[in-house]
Length: 133
Image 1 (cartoon, rainbow, N blue to C red):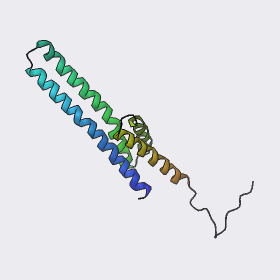
Image 2 (cartoon, helix red, strand yellow):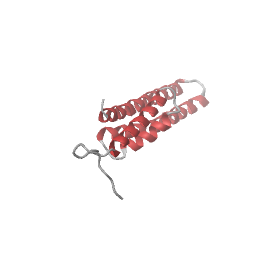
Image 3 (cartoon, rainbow, N blue to C red):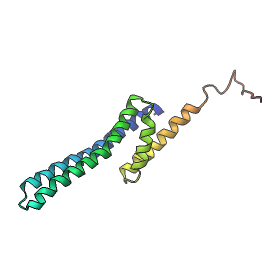
């Protein structure tokens, strides 16, 4: 697997991981606002929709940078890999999947930088080049 395939896999992984944050956001929002409408306690009827909306928005805001990083990586934007690296490093604390995504982001970023810094031709005519100062 060459580095371009790893970069593509990294973009897909960031999008999938961010979508996994959107699912609980939608569930918490839907459940708490629905329960808030049918509960008999008037105080809970006011609080549950607010909490559901707040938690849903919070999880949505956490998922958006990962979606943008995945999009940037997949479309080859210049800002895609650096943002994927930052988001991946922030996700390292979310064991086990965030840790794996963060480690993979770091590995792909370092490998892609190594490949971009390698000289295109190290030898000229089968001989080692001589450098003079």
